[in-house]
Image 1 (cartoon, helix red, strand yellow):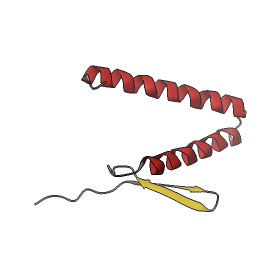
Image 2 (cartoon, one colour):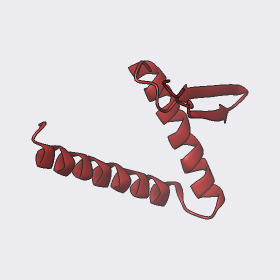
Image 3 (tube, one colour):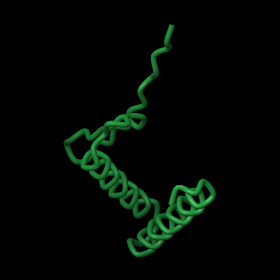
Image 4 (cartoon, helix red, strand yellow):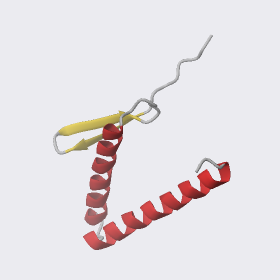
Length: 83
């Protein structure tokens, strides 16, 4: 008997809209994932500024996290020889 997988949904309320995607959905569209990503980054920047960072500091940290994430992905792919 095959066990049902539980779906993991992320919901972000942005303005008056709820935007959500299932994180383990292999059929999520690029548009859905990018929309969710953009909303999350907007909320993250706003939260960082509310906590006392300047906008430029928040953006610098976000840019750095992108660079680190891309490096980690490339390193992982090169180890698996999928690149």
